[in-house]
Length: 242
Figure (spheres, rainbow, N blue to C red):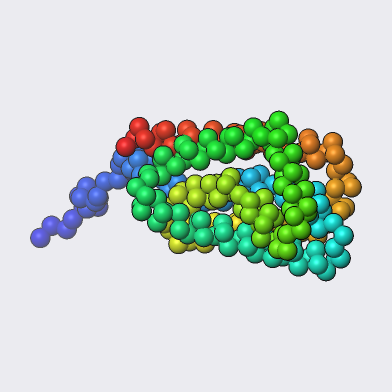
């Protein structure tokens, strides 16, 4: 039997096509980067702008005039806890409420975006600050015993705008437990900032002054208006995609 020559053995070796391998590598699907960090930042910015902790500092001072520092701390803590419970309930129960009422998420995105835009316009034109001051004056005149629940927690902190924004952000989570847990973490972070601002309300008001507070409120109003328009655009896209 004739021995195989090296040439014959090499002729039967599998051929490698560099061009084909390159094409397969190029056509292989690439893993897209996760957008979770972007969504987390968007949720944080939305809630921070809507709640507006710095803008609530003068209202908190007006509601707690004449109270001692420990009493102010108790009121601030209780108000933040009540607002956290309201917003967390909106995040967890918003989808169930939509199903019960037969409201689609795109419809609520459009309506919620319009509501947030109206709140943003109030911030830009200074109407919201005047309304918050009027609410604080009425609460002081009526000598409300539990100003932490009303009007501080509701409607100043967890008002219609904050509840609407929370439900919209919960709709983006699409029922995923991890996403909802992150959203609740964002809510707690924003309200923790509120608590810190309330504790330092006197120093913040003295540092910003009337002009600084007005400028900051208008700047945050412009940011909120842009976010509101984006919610409306997302809702319209979802309607046409369906």
